[in-house]
Structure formats: C-alpha cells, structure tokens
Amino acid sequence: MNREEKKEYQKKYQREYYQRPEAKTKRKEYREKNKEKINKQKREYSYIPEVKKKRKEYNKEYHQRPKFKVKRKEYEKIPEVKKRIKEYRLKRKYNLTLKQLNTLLIKQDNKCAICNCLFGKIKLNKPSVDHNHSTKKIRGVLCNNCNTGLGFFKDNISNLNSAIKYLKENDKKD
Image 1 (cartoon, helix red, strand yellow):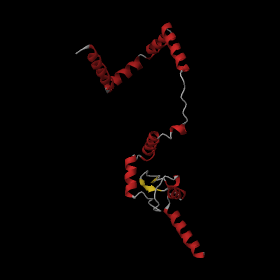
Image 2 (spheres, one colour; image 1 turned 30 degrees about the vertical axis):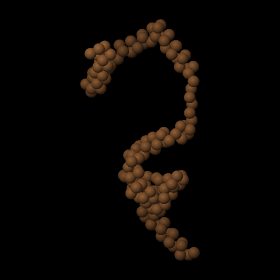
Image 3 (cartoon, helix red, strand yellow; image 1 turned 45 degrees about the vertical axis):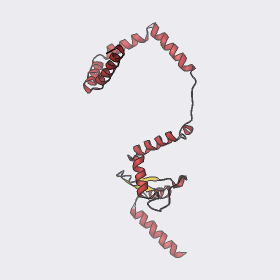
C-alpha cells in the first residue's frame, strides 16, 4: 500500500467512524463536559496574529469577488429548476411524487375528474391535486376551476346539493 492509498484508506475509515452513533454520543458528551475549555481555545485561536491576518485576507478577497445576482423569477424559468421545484412542492404538500401524479393523470385520461376538460399548457387548464383537507388523502386531479369551486363550497356535500337545487330551480324559470 503506497502513501496515497494509505491516506485514502484513513479518510474512508475516519468518515465511517464518525458516522457511527457511539462516536457521535462520545463527541457530544466531551463537548458538554469541556464547554468552557473549548470556548477558551476558540477565543485564543482567533487572536493569533497569523490567523487574524489570514482571515482578514480571505474577507478582503471574498468581498472583491463579483456577485452574481439572479432574480428568483428568472431562476425559476430554467426547466430543470422548474421541475425540481414542482417535485419539492408535490412532496411537501401532498406527499406525492411526479411519477405518482403522472399515473393519476393517465388513469383519468389527462382529463379533469369532474368536468372532463383536457389538461393543457394554459394556466386555467393545468392539473391541480384535489385532496381532503382533514385527512390529507388525495382524491384525484381536477382542473383549476373545479378545484377552486370545491374549495369555495368547503368540500361540503350539503352545500353542493343546495347549489345544485338552486341551479335547477332557477333554470326552470328561464
């Protein structure tokens, strides 16, 4: 085993060792017991002239670097970023992956479960995940109009029945 291989082996061993739970608890216990000693060492280290000089040079160099400011809206237009954001929101909000959403859309023939309109690129015809707010269970995929309509009726069946009754009564008058 040459010198480079030995270094790599040691790095790998140390990484594995420090990932073990017992090593983490040992480090935590040591830090709790020797809190004052560690803080004192940190303070003393930061006042060493060489360290101070090095830090000053680094800060100077850092502040002279060009800053790349990209507005969030411009950043979100990049297709890969858009996809990642969509995946993140689906996972966080509904615990759903893009693959699962696509299978739901295939089951529904890429149509809204209520009005059967085709989903397209238009904002109003984008698929929206419909879910029960109390149980968080996903019911299906709806168009934006149907999803907001259900939301306005607060997912209450009696409210929807009343709306249907109202529409039927008023259609007869015309």
